[in-house]
Amino acid sequence: MSEKTQAEILKEQLFATSDHASYTCDDAEIAQADAFCEDYKKFLDICKTEREAAAYVKALAEKEGYKPFDPKASYKAGDKVYSDIHSKALILCTFGTESLEKGAKIVASHIDSPRLDLKPNPLYEDSELALFKTHYYGGIKKYQWTAIPLALHGVIYRKDGSCVTVSLGEDEGDPQFVVTDLLPHLDKKQANRPLDEAIAGEDLNILVGSRPFGKDKGSEMVKLNIMKLLNEKYGIVEADFLSAELEMVPAFKARDIGFDRSLIGSYGHDDRVCAYPSVMAAFAAAAPKYTSVTVITDKEEVGSDGNTGLHSAFLKHFIADIAATQGLNGRDVLRASECLSADVNAGFDPTYPSVHDKLNAARLNKGIVVTKYTGSRGKSSTNDANAEFMAKIRSLFDGEKVAWQTGELGKVDEGGGGTVAKYVANLGVEVVDVGVPVLSMHAPFEIVAKLDVYMAFKGFKAFLEQ
Ligand code: MN
Ligand code: MN
Image (cartoon, rainbow, N blue to C red; front, top):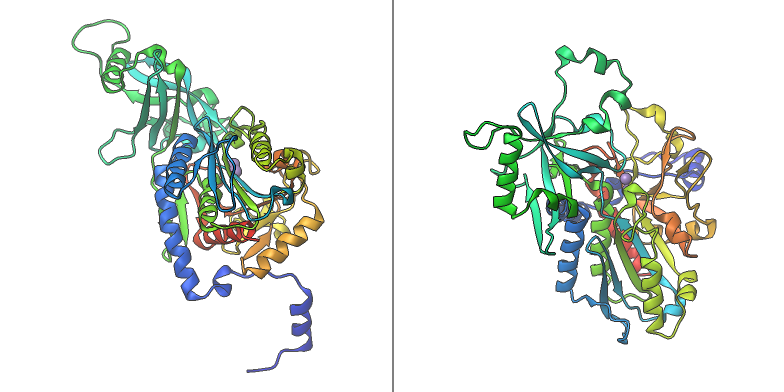
């Protein structure tokens, strides 16, 4: 072997590097990462909506010994509690050996994903076809949602308060649904419009049937037939759509991508790819020194507003409640707390290099992305993590051999985005964004690398076990 040159030695000492995680993991760890992702894929297929994810995680947590939080109870180290936020968000908490005076370690991710929501009055008939009107949820590229198989998920509350849960289009043999698109032979006008105007929001109508009721002639016979079928299957009438939350989501299953199976393609990696590892990390960190708080929240994709989003007071109030069990003030606990805002970042895509600053872009397989700030137009509307806290997180991840990298969400003024980081930071908590790099973010079929998913688990666990 030839000896290293002085320049090579000096470069190693002075230059920042980040390697493909497969160079830093041994074969056993790579196998562990692949096995972890098998369970993650199951989670993706079962949990396509925030309600489904919250219910699934709650059931898992109950099996792990988590109990509903009781503000009047007293808790000791190792006790596990949860708080259910209107069935769409969840907080898991394990009490630490240290007093809450020393703060909590919070990991916050989101379980809502972009999709097509049914309007309050969705069903209509036009030209003897039955369709649903939708209002898209979150930042979608509308053209990506046409001509793909969709499944219907959600809940319908009837007038008497009884509830029916809907999941149709996932099982083999289930019917599926679709937004139609123009044929290329007749799309000259559409094709000449800018990409974001090619498909209008009001064009995202979903085809749900085409056969009339019986032999009677009359208006709206196809609609009548659909309503009759819905009445038979779910016991609902048209007015019940008003008290429903019905979401059309891609009907694909999570699949390995590539000859080497190193990647996963799925709907809704953003942000289940952080939520799932964070929950697994909370379960694995069973006896933490500091109290651990794992939040999986709703509404991030629409700005975190509403009583199930992190812009509301649910986390602040939960911290105040657990603080009170130790005779402390919530604000003192928050001031001493630290949080990983666990959300995805854009992975560098070699087909579209121009939107990234290569020096500050996250790459697939280089581990979790530590993102100091997000925002847009000159760091507007974001948490910008404090240097002191960045140093601490760097050191923690290096010490625990968590593959990590830095990343910015695209070039300056190229666009931008946000996460829940700022809402948690606004409570006085030290916060930094940490998450998995994704290709085709917000598309119906997003791509992540398996090693990065595992590094998210490893990173969150290291943070909770400090
Ligand atoms: Mn996200
Ligand atoms: Mn998103």
